[in-house]
Image (cartoon, rainbow, N blue to C red):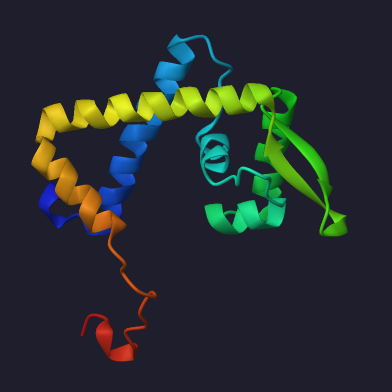
Length: 151
């Protein structure tokens, strides 16, 4: 496939991987416990007060089993903990431990530096335009109907 033939979702995926790979490599160089891209994604969608595994799976677009495995790996590393959900005796909330909160803050600083690096490479205006486009309200995902596909 020629680079010009790549669609926007592919390009957005590559951009996400650029950030993820740089973040993981920087954390590893700093001596942080190694985490998988799935664990990294889970950490990013976690609410401050905690989130259920089912909700984490929905936000990440993965199965509940995959989210559960990622949670257990991060619990084993001491970055997450499980706590009773005050709203339901049957559910447990996943939340950051104090060490997990420190790791989350470190990751945020690294991502800021990566964004600055990107601005140096492609220009501050390009990064600002990209941010504005991604922060814009796109509305609900459309259903284009049966006639929208190729002839």
